[in-house]
Length: 516
Image 1 (cartoon, rainbow, N blue to C red):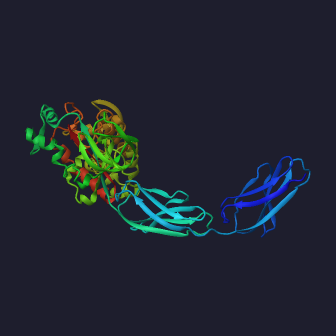
Image 2: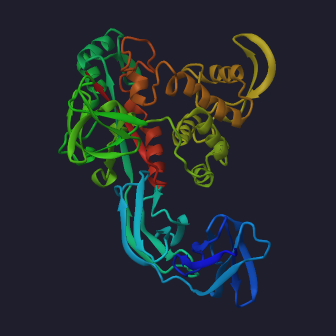
Image 3: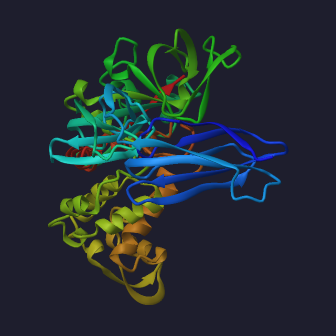
């Protein structure tokens, strides 16, 4: 017998670009087969959206507005007819109603270079779509940080301090509008200093005793003389140069950011205490207390302790309008600043052979993991702003008294240029290392500095303080100078670095030593 058709219905909002489900019910003596159709009445064209099968539902997503018929053919599985019964129903496909905006929130602090999450909520009869934007008010340039999607949040990491608008465009899925509604909020971003603590197993008095065994020197009227214990203690004690105290009342260190993929939160300040939670990289928490290398944080409704070795402390330039020069010795020299080639070249205008060498300094930074601002500052000081004989090329015909193939060499950081015979020793060092061009001298010299000190796998002396005092091994020999004031005397180099960082809104990181 022919199949008999019951009800034919459609589920879903009758709007553009939203999937609908056509459903039919039928009966037959054997097995009922269903074939689904849609007709666009503006063109009178039929489209079969699903051929005969046992499935009594079919999906349809209209791609334009207008009048349609949707329907079904049914037949018994043994029937030889094209169909035993059919039914078509009319439907009008329209544009969706506009989405309505509900809320816009920014999560994160007001410091550059840290992660912000912008979250929005909207109501739609279909599905709300979100598009996120940021406007730099200093340039009036808009940046779309996330295109239209169902994702209602976006990540933003501002690179420069200043005034911004952040916001969202919302529209209903299927809408042909550029947006249905929008919302922008204003925020002021401030530069940031990031503080790390390095903890050492030796106490300060013991470290000082080790330094005194090395006959430390100071320079008086260009002559080295023995330094007293009090003089060494003053230069070596980091607390004499850090213009704030690490306490819970200090605004400079009121937040911590996790700096490892996962970190246990414990019930007390010990690795033997019970784990009560696990936190992840870049999460930030209020700092409540500090005990012996452990930080107490608030996590949800609870409080717990995390190891201070795996976090960074967030400070704010709003609270430090002028950076004390004594802090320069703690600036981390590894990593890269991310400054553009054009901006770096602007710092090198009129600097002799260094002019237009930004590309080489950036390559050196990326290859050797050294801040390019430090490399430029170091080379400017050592070469007299690119005018020294060593930086402009020296012909070398012998090394250590042995004849070699004559080559012109370059030395951009004064490596090997020891006092009393700087030109000869510096040029021979350059020859030995193969620095036969300005570019190779910039990159090769950076590699030497990296391997010997800043990224040395044994010493990791990536601050001037570590180079001078080697707090990880104060009884060892790997210290850059005997002059007890060497670290603070590098202010010419470091002032240039700090000024450029401020000019281009680069976040400076500090590594502050903590003795047991």
